[in-house]
Each structure stands twice: as C-alpha cells, then as structure tokens.
Length: 214
View (cartoon, rainbow, N blue to C red):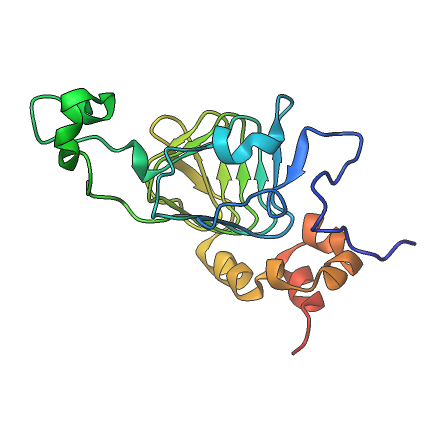
C-alpha cells in the first residue's frame, strides 16, 4: 500500500483536472498567506484566484487561510479596499475619476479598516460564498453556498444565508475543545497518511488514540 503523502507543492493535484489548484504554490502576494493542501475549484480559471477571488486588495490588511481548506467555485473575499466614505451625503469616490477631482484624494484615503481576514484550518466553503473584510472564520467551520459572511464564525460552526447566520455547530463545546487541543491539521503529513480513515470518518476518541506522542 502506498504510504507516501500527497505533494503540497504541486499546482494541480489532479493532473487531468486543471480546475483544481492548490493555493499555497499558486499565490504570490505577500499579503496572502495560505496553508498547505488548501485548494480552490473553478472550471473557468482557477489559477486566477488572486485577481478574481480576492477583491479590492489594496493593502495593508492580509488574507490568511489555514491548512486543508476546501474552496468551492466562486468563493470571494472582499478586502478593505472596497470601503467607501459613509459620513457625508454621497458615498461616490469622486477622486478616483481623475481630473481636478483627484486633488481631493485625501477624502478617500485612510478610511477605517476592519483588519485582517482570517480563516482557520479545515474550513469548507460552498459555491459562491462571500466573506466580507475583517472576518475571522474558526477551525472546522462550514460556509454554505451563497452565504455572505459579515461576522465572525465560531470554531466548527455552520453558517448560511445573507447575512450569514449560525445554523448550528458540528460538535458540542466540550468536543470542540477536544478537537482544538488535538489540532490534527498540525500533525505530520506522514502520520495523517497512516490514519486517514480515522481523520475522515472516525470519532474524537479515535483521534485521541492516534494522536502523535511528543
């Protein structure tokens, strides 16, 4: 039996399926940090993730995505650069149109941001989900198709809707604490290879039994 873990450095883990890309070897922006094995699936152009799926990323806020995350087609992250003034009669960004309006560029710079957007490990994003700036999505969360995430999502929470609301959590509080303590996503890939069935379909008791010993 093959005991070699999958290679986290290849762009297309399935050579005959170019619609699937591993994101860590794809992204080049220093403002985007993505963990190993997190992938994006898009039949049009998955390799354009940085420009088509991370929008208005003019910095300096970061997008951080953990390991083993699954991003369905059309998942988008709206960054702080999309912000407009809301303290006057008009929200229109006149200075970016140029001409003499550009003399008032100070009116659209330095707008308050919401900080980095952070996604934990083992998060599953459904088709066309959207994440707004400054949100924190916890480990093991599930984001339903079409959800618009405007608030933080707890660890192992399932959210859906526009705006996204918590539907339920996947485990009770005690079991979530056990899972966070195990942090299987930090286990060596070789160890995961030996115990994939327990990780994918076992119980928390099973995980505790196979956890690497320090």
